Length: 256
Image 1 (tube, one colour):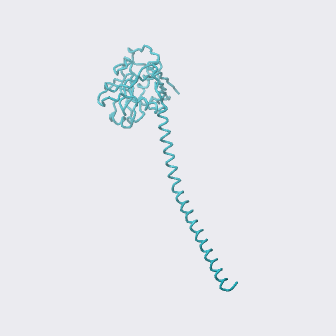
Image 2 (tube, helix red, strand yellow):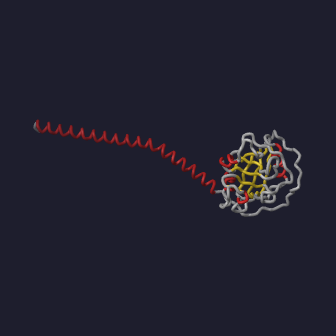
Image 3 (cartoon, helix red, strand yellow):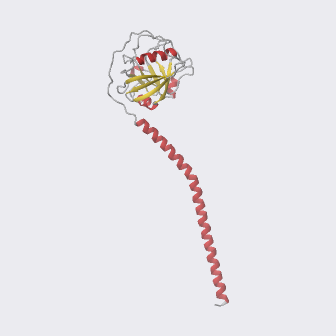
């Protein structure tokens, strides 16, 4: 091989080596870019998947709540009672488990804050007063109301109690007692459906005795709240009927 041919072969080898180095460098740059994009996308995808899961879980839990149309056994209610003697121990914890047409929820009762109110509710529940009654009123995004032996918003146990309002007002999940003015608390109660509903109750001063707070099963309360009369007028309680009969099957009191 001549010296010229040898130099030409060396030049070609150098060109080939250079081209290979450039190819490898370009491949490395593409891989680094892909890895960088992947590091950016992974957190975004993770966040998207997380919130999709949470949203679907929430939708699933709400949609899984179904409501029975079966009317529970009806018993005669004593609507000519005297206010009960004070028997609860305010140092103890009281909860009410309420089984309804749409499922069961639990109320933590505010015994220390509203002793007469809770004492009355516990007294009535233990005698079965609430069993078989209806939720007769649902105000959209506001309250679900029940506990009336007449089922029309005019009934009660025959006695009236002083108002024991909560110190800090109401919130979503609060349970309070309906009344027709100061110191007229009876057996009717309402469940607050939303923060807007709590705000609409006004105060201070707060006008309704606080019974307690829903501690478990708020999705059941929300399902009840969704079954309102679609043609209701916000300012007219008489139009705020339920779209189907909704019953309180049973109220059970636990003391600890």
